[in-house]
Image 1 (tube, helix red, strand yellow):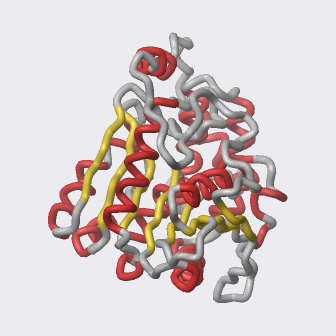
Image 2 (tube, rainbow, N blue to C red; image 1 turned 120 degrees about the vertical axis):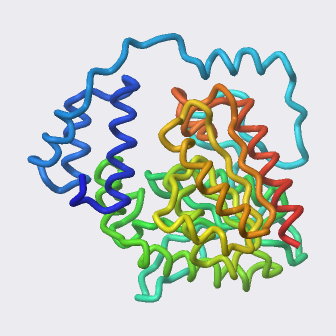
Length: 327
């Protein structure tokens, strides 16, 4: 796949993983890879190289969730992931009295609207800001819900859709079509949008900025830490792929909390190299590998991967990390 860019390769690897896990058919894999790569011939070659999915076994995530349920989770003062999958993606309503929701006008350097979604605590105090970066499906209702959850924890939170110029998740409802649009944008272009978002958020908050993101957004969080770290005090990437320039982590000043899944070996295996660079930085860091769970364990709309116990533990740790370092 040498002719593909880094984002295209990452998205295709994700869809191959879904196929190998029995979540999509071979035909659907071929369709998705064709859309993302832009070449039916290349897609055929890639899919032909894939093996046959292993027989479906008992879900290890379900086993872990069942055993974890024996230890009751202590509710927090802020909203946390739900105790079971939430297909609609809503755990905090937009009219929740704890928060104020808006769609501010954030534009890229080219003047393009970035489809921003923001939630603030219902207070007049100046509080820290947190950028929430979406998964590879864009600004879904689940991501807007995470923005609202962050606001209940006392942060001004904002998300933009990185494929806004193509209509974002609202227009690109097919996941492969969305991936194809997003993969057209190179790292420099995405970083300019992140930079515009951070600049806007600084004016809306105390000026102390944190970043968190999931899946593709976890990788974008790492990219921000390596490229825009003077503007970011703390970061929490969730199962994010290793950035190409990960050696730059040795220079970061941001406090980093990495959230990873034990069963997500393709992604989690890269954390050792990144940890070696973080050690050199002298900045606070922790890499947490949650046992017995897989990629996307935090996404409560994904019934195949969601693990309530791990998601709740990770989110509480995320909020505590930001409260400690966004001062």
